[in-house]
Picture 1 (cartoon, rainbow, N blue to C red):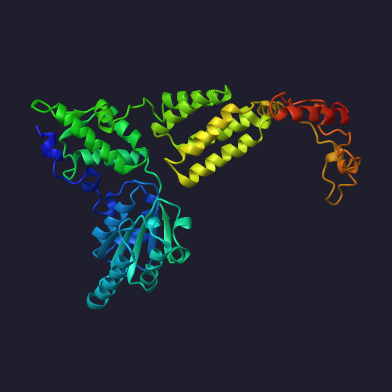
Picture 2: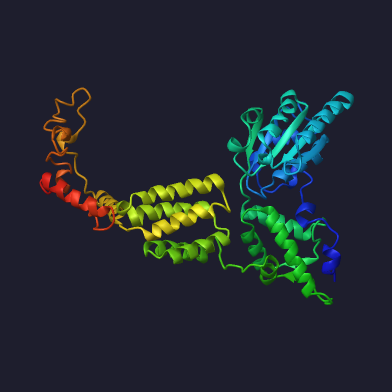
Length: 445
């Protein structure tokens, strides 16, 4: 039996050991790896126009920015220099540039400079990169988790290609976990991964490959420690091992199964029922289970329109703002605007009158209850319309002091039909009083 100590001690982290040695091993980001793409061209040692374009890789943590850069380094055969914006300064950048010029002039060798976390560089530090990028002394591959439009200076952006990485899918994470379990660079089949443990690791990763492999390594150590001394079977990693390793409870939550629908249902019903504490609880469960925050944001927008409506027109604006914020800043900070919107929607006045109105109107239309548009409302701007009587008798509301003139707007078949019945709640209380006056002017139609 392979012990935990012999498997884990004195080694670099599993996530580092399992970095792909070529682009063929990269999981996900296939939209950036098509034939002829800038990344593929950089990785090709036979490319006739090597490194003409510098690139900026923008994406969430654990999506493969460093992996792509190192895969290029291993495949291209070009000189590769790596700097981190956390520790490097202007002096380090200038030294790299000078060395790159020397390598080019003496040996005809192209230098690739990988700069991680470029958003941490000041404007002056980023300015130091410009001569090298502009003159082709180096091919810059820069990585950032923040929007480059705000964190990278414009001259550097204009001289580089911006490539956006997407969060890894569950299938992508599954491929990486399976490979790390069996590959000689990884756990080398020292453990067997139970299906529920595999699902837990994928769920907890939330699209972050590094998090998945770190969790796998820790869970494998737990399983091997439990199996120490046993010789009859390979240690099996269970979901309990994963829970113990990552020091957090495993939520029974499947993004495609019953828990997904049950929790989102409870979330929306808690908002509708004006219970902010319950709503925030279910929000936390979804976040911790790795639910797509965009899905949560979409449900908030729907809730604002369906359950709150005109009782508080600001609710839809706040829900949309939360959705925009999540798309802009991502997670984990995105949890904050999601929580703000959730609490606002749960505590504000509620009305489903607009939701009911459109449903009833659609039901009438589907049942054939639509009729002809009244002739005085028909378009009268094209040739021959007046001969047909279109627009005749139309009363222009702005000619009235109150901006309303009595006339029929619904087709004859639906004249007098009411769809919208505002409730005496929140801002809709004022709408109700105003609508009553409007309907009296219109002749209670």
